[in-house]
Image (tube, rainbow, N blue to C red; front, side, top):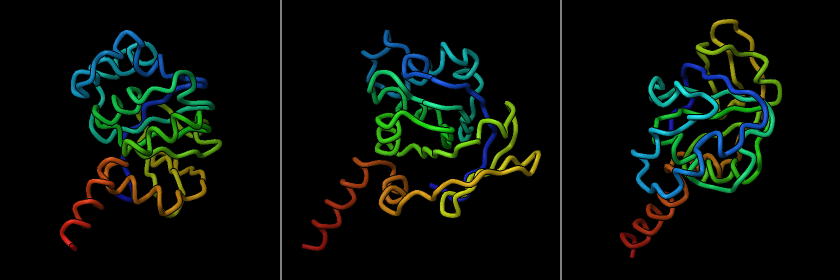
Length: 171
């Protein structure tokens, strides 16, 4: 994980639920590379074909509401989303995304600062999101160190794998 994170912005509105991120009809797909082909088919139909690794998602309130499915953040991570920043998140989505290694930042007021295609910079440790076109920014409480550690490791599973490997090599 890099800090700061730089990327091109895709903008979403309020109440983007997990069915809009990845439709329920794709929940039998377990291969992230196949799953990413269907991300945002409902909310941003052009996204899967035009998104580039490192692109950022900026959204309004209650992002990730709805069903508690890991497929949604998993598909975004597979397509290369650099981070998701929203005015607010559904709690279970927020935690699923962090556990899967997808930077997820709650920054009230962020949606109002961006238009689609704007360049942005996110400073996780400093707690800022800046629109590099306008210079406007919003602050957020920096993520706690244990969540930054999860993101740095690539998610919870990868962090546990590293810790287990380190424990075996130390023995």
